Image 1: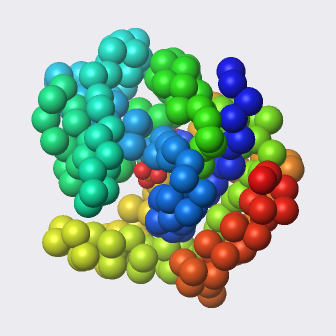
Image 2: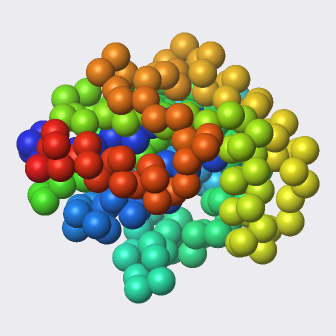
Length: 224
Ligand code: DC
């Protein structure tokens, strides 16, 4: 593993990790790993190939052989699965819920580990997920863990879906968030929890700019 600097941002769904991570990567000119996208892509590939979500062996094979590409474009990152543009498809609540199921299997997680670590190249990496600080990049010089109330996270996720022209019912988004929290936090392998050396930021009352500014200050202090 190279020793390019890496900053990890972990936390539950809808907490704003993705937005803050992408802003940080852009600000420092670093690479960005959206590890949730890998689990979402594995879930979508499994569904496309008719694989049962309880078949760990078959799901691991899918994860090992994922044919994916992240194309950086002016408008953002275009995500391709087996050559098809699935950038917006993988953001649906259905794919998110299936990703959370697929992610509970240790063989699937193992299959995606090497791919995730390969993102750590110069000049640096911002890695966003659930276990970036506890499993994937345990030696990261700065680990952030973002939290917010489930109601606030549901509100943010609902707004994000609305902005992306995806119809969603707020109460349903809240139930989905709470179910996903429960599954991600209670699973046996790599459960969602802060690393012992993580800095915890409760973002319930904070704007994206507030969180971004706190993170920039911490990175300048501890990493740069
Ligand atoms: O961050 P997200 O909503 O795109 O993630 C989708 C699911 O993938 C999430 O419910 C749990 C799983 N996941 C994981 O287990 N580990 C990660 N590092 C990232 C995501």
